[in-house]
Image (cartoon, rainbow, N blue to C red; front, top):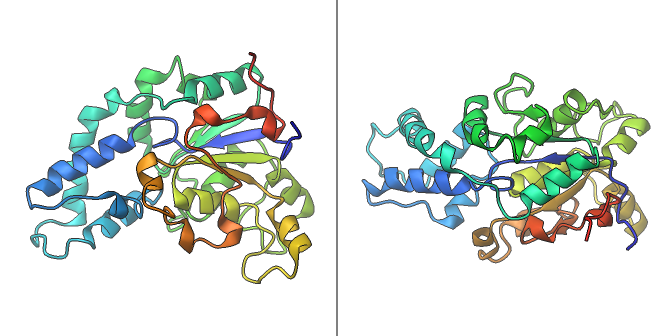
Length: 281
C-alpha cells in the first residue's frame, strides 16, 4: 500500500476518541435537565463537542431559554462536575485504542494527547487506565487549563495541537494558523509530518487550521488546492450517533477544513497508510 503521507508523530484528542467519557457527559447533563423536563439530544450535543467547557455550557443552555433564572452556567457546571466526578473512574478505552496506542509506543513513534479537559478531570479519567493506555504517553499530555493556551484560543483554533507538538514532542511547528508570513517553510514541513486524530468537528477544524496554506482566499486550481492540503493530517473518528445526523455538521465546514479520512472506529485505522509501522499479523 502506498502511504498517503509520511507521518512522524501523532497527537490524539481524548474524550470520545480514546475513552468513552462522552457517555458520562450525556448521562450527567440529562439527569440534571430531566428535573425541568428537558433533554440534550444528539443534534444539540453535536454543537458542544470539542468546545471549551464554558463555551459548551453556554451553547447548551441557549437551547433552553425558559429554564429558571437561578439555573446559571455556574450552577450547572458545579452540579455537573459533582456528578461526573462519581463516574470518571468507570470510563473505558474505546475499540481499537489500546492496540493502536500500544503499537505506536512499541515502535517509538512520538505521540501525545491534546485535550480540552481540565487537568483535574484528565487525572480522574486516566488514573485507572495508566498501565494499559495513558502511561504509554509518558506524561505528554496538554490540558485546556495548563496555562499554555491563551483564553479564547480553544478549538477550532489550532493552538492546542501546535503547543502539544512543540512542548511535548519538541517539533518546530511555530505558532498560529498557517496563513501568515511568520510561519517558515521549515515549520510548514514540520506540521505536515504530524497526524491528528479527533472525534469532534471543532477538533478536526483545529487540526486543519494548524497546517493550512491560507484559508481566506479560494484556491485557483486543483494543484493549488492539493498543495494547501499537504499539511498536518487529520483523521476523524466520530461517534456513531453523530454519523446518524446525516452530514454530521460537516456540511457547514469548508473544503479546507474537511478531515483527510473518516473512520467508524480506530479498529479500522491502518498504520501503514500513513507511513507508520504496520500491525504484526
